[in-house]
Image (cartoon, rainbow, N blue to C red):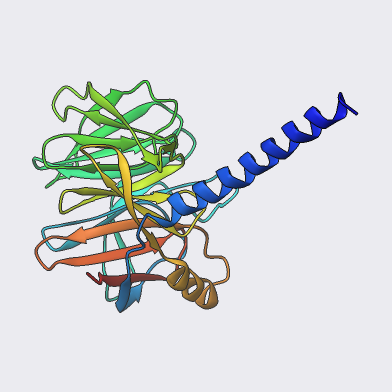
Length: 269
């Protein structure tokens, strides 16, 4: 009996600690606020567009797309989206046999584009869309891209964001992203909005709001309702991906891969 009692006691302590740990984790998770929003409008979107990047520049909505081998109808392009028709005015097309297009950013009259697994990016002149140069990066993959007006900010599917100098395209710094102290992985398409970085989380309907001074997730946005609407309209709609901010009109647009609509939403403060 003397040998079994301590074991039982230790087991009880371990079970209590585990339960308490779960409770603490749950409480911490609940401490991150959810961003409430309302649906303002929706616009047509090409259901062959495998969205990888979305942004607004000079009152125009730019989109970049990828091209999975198993989806023959897709292409890796950059274009300007007509919100009246859903048609993408294509400006750049990548060779599908070589490259899978990913995120884009516009800075200093240049368009920057990442590719998925090629460790290569492209820079284009914003007016002509002529390619200016190519660049390489050490990240195993390229996913999302945005800018804070000074640096390019890149995601690669991990919990790290990489800041790049827009001129030399060398790494300035790496910012680890954490939620309640734990690494927040699968960061995908990015958008910089009023001093914060917003990131789609791959294969979810979640967008996280990140404080770039700390790397901490400070709020979340659940797009489940608009994702359900997209799938109701077009059953082949895939994961949420794409957030764009029109700073002039204070408008936010969201969409997803092969969604039939682009949704304009408004954050409730």
